[in-house]
Length: 115
Length: 113
Image (cartoon, each protein chain N blue to C red):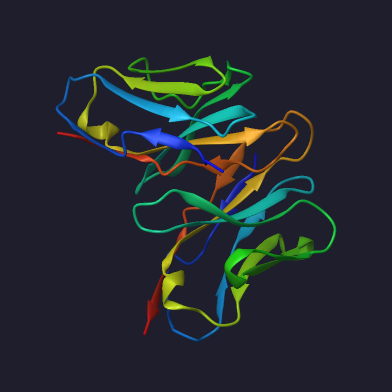
């Protein structure tokens, strides 16, 4: 069974500082990996995804994530955080292969940004 | 382009009442998912439809919950009778054919008193 761990429940950073949100997954084969962001009272918006190929993927809003198979990690990064990035971030893992549909989500990391 | 549309956005009801949540997936998408989000359990998949057919309903909590997809552009999630522990945010998501990414609606925030 697949699983996702986001070790940090809540992170606070200053505006302009760099950011790294951690995500570790468990899955037997090469997974499909996603980061979603949820602003207060809103749905989940896709930030970026990894299926195969280049292990460093670029997403929207200046975010990037790096897939590290040896560490079973898919950490999300941003070089300079803006106040509007305050939200909750979810990492998700999906099974690869035809017919697969399950997405398993982590519990989320809430990001607060200090002006 | 219109995303996934859910209604109502907020619902407050009393225990024992019937609640119906509605979802319109992205046009052309053939997979639809209903999720529930709570503080305690996070995001849980309730049911998955493919081509309007329920494929996996193992996440539906109990018989009080039912879901239908009468056509490719509409789905409902019904709770009857509702209980306070059903209070949560319910999300609908859709996915295109041969795609891996699920696109989420804004959610329905349900409060059962």
